[in-house]
Length: 324
Image 1: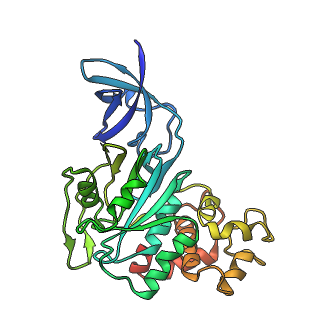
Image 2: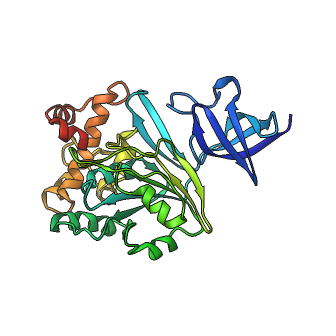
Image 3: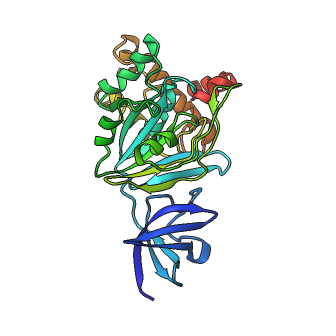
């Protein structure tokens, strides 16, 4: 049978929508498993390129997943494995909010750490609500570190034209906590009807309304709406990848006493010295240490245990553990 190549635009219950040109097919994986994919929660994600054969008018079988150029990947607790949310994106847009749910910069730090080989933009929705001085400083820090940041309001439309200009010609995935307004932004930008939800008054957190990632075509760009989450966990793998997601560590790490220094327990670490001198933001460094602590706690079999970071995690209360 002739083989074709298409892109995954949706996946529900192991049935994937694969688009090739103007045609779309509902496909299952041939043999239920891809031989090239192991130790992953889900073999395919929205944005993946796949080879497939056509078995009916609008049906097919997926044979293999083509190599990814990049991905957004997180740790799935229930599945006890890494889960790729989207792949082959031109940009990840981390959507946060000024309030309801509150601004959580450590969540943004983890979104960046989960984004492999792909540009990240940080968008503050509900920008008509003022940040505190400390929150504004933390948000502005991302710009100083080289990230594009924008303030928008999906309700009033403030900042949206400038934001949309940055999306043109790109395939972009929106990532964020439940309730920050990802779907509302997409509805406003594309004039579609993605489900939106309310905020839990008890916890000041969003309620899940998007249940699966969905690729939506726009006039000049393509958006992927992803399910909102309350917490996000960095994936298992080389801890050096987490260190590399902190650009302020890059230059100093070259003169640390150890090659591939993790800036944690190692003596004479230049990063730790710069944190003490206030040249690296203390909360960013704490955010980084908590990511390392989460890796120690979850995967001692593939990295040396760090007594300091593991003890730091275990001494956290429940709210602090949610922040790691």
